[in-house]
Length: 189
Image (tube, rainbow, N blue to C red; front, side, top):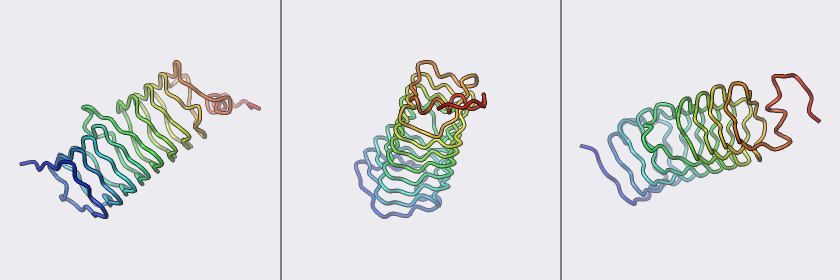
């Protein structure tokens, strides 16, 4: 039978295999917790906040994130593609998400603020109205993504092929134009 945790705060916890399985967390706060060795089976986070937590290489295949915020978290090489897609809503502030995967997810309205998103897989992802606020998108892949009304205006180091990515009404800065024209091998000054 699933466990239910409501409005609890967890600090300096280290989670290992099976310690979180079949648990629903609602309104919980996780401070400086380590999830690197955790496996997640039937875990749901609703209205939860993660502060300074480490998820590097965590296996989050069967997790539901419903209105979840990550602040100053390390989330390298994490595959979000297998998460529960029902009411998937996440926000990232000052996080390192390098080499993570959002492949084919619908993350409409997600915010990435001051994040490192180096070599992140956004292929075939629905990025409609996503805000990339001051993010490093070096070598991130956007092939077949839907980035309608996405805001890249303060982000940098991205390369997006407008012929392979839907970018209607997306916002870019003048400095970011070179990332849209890279395949044409032209110089923008």
